[in-house]
Length: 461
Ligand code: NAD
Image (cartoon, rainbow, N blue to C red; front, side, top):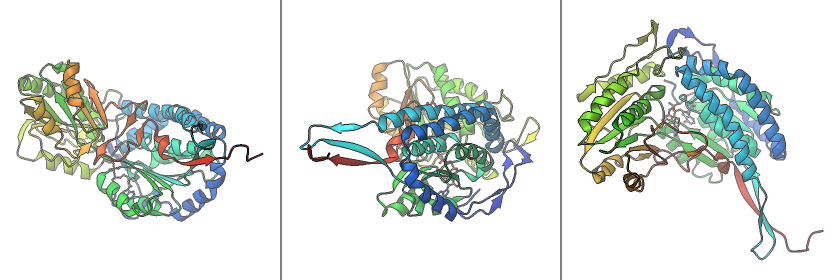
């Protein structure tokens, strides 16, 4: 595992084929990046929006050309199945269009006519922004915040996960080439570089997507700099509630998909299932069959639906969870090999009984428990301090409404997997899952500060 210490140089191995060693990466000295970003801030802030849009459009054209290579890079470096990696790249490219739309709306002149003086509200760039990304969506999650900050006039320093350093460098080269010098820069490194960037006083906005402990420590360290915007996208312990009237086959397929995409390494992965006890035996049978369809395979093959975990440490965590004495419906196993390739491969596992609600799972292990009535399902579901996504499986609009009114989570689905999060909607969580829902649509609202102008009538010529 990469710890929160300075990484000078390292080489990643493909988690799906440990014989593949990627090119060496060196940590970037951060002081020059900070100086460049501070130096570029004024002129980028004064660059008109259409000009910034032009830069992003030209980056988008190049990303489109590089799409297949970048998707393959994601699959090789973090082990995400290629079909999912292509989906990630489509989201990266599509996000540019959506964010341009958001920026045009956000920057539209806003006149205020009901006050004592004619007035208007302007949106000012904040200044240099740091975007810190996790390994599991190495480009898409950082890209959303990057594009929004750039359109807002904020120079960006992007610190990707060290697990995705090579593919992040390819992406960064494309973005940087489309923009003036110093406006977009890449910082390679680990937690040490990330922390130093976030805490530097020249940085006026931070978007951090990653784990709760790091998010919390950043929030504590930055508390005194209250004008620095800190947007946090953290973890989840997402649940599915399966009611007695649900389409059980559909629910089983959606839960299996929610648990197994990206090998369970998604903030919105399904890791807890609550099922009405009247249908629990039938649902368990269906879920065992649905989960069984996800078997480890080479992430580069289009038919693979379950890639490897990211690291040996993640496999060790999986093995520890799978070794717990419990009522296992599908016991865990870590073959550490698939299709003749050695890698961090594990199989999905399913057990009865919900365990720690306050710790992320982040491996493909699903826990299932039955409930006697809807009130009980809510008590169990809401025992988690996370509040990212939740799925309700029912045919009744009334039941859906009854449950949704009591779920303190950012994204709720009816008869859809917890992992289904299109860029057209806001995304993010309540509670331990983060603040203000900076993911998904409309990140642009974090990127500027408002300035109110009042002008005495007829006082200016
Ligand atoms: P992580 O917290 O270990 O690392 C995330 C990033 O933070 C990396 O780039 C890392 O180098 C950097 N970092 C580490 N210590 C730091 C510090 N002290 N200061 C600044 N930066 C630091 O997370 P990970 O293992 O890469 O990713 C998985 C986590 O990300 C999970 O908790 C997952 O739920 C979360 N996540 C959340 C969302 C969301 O949208 N809510 C999406 C994807 C992943």
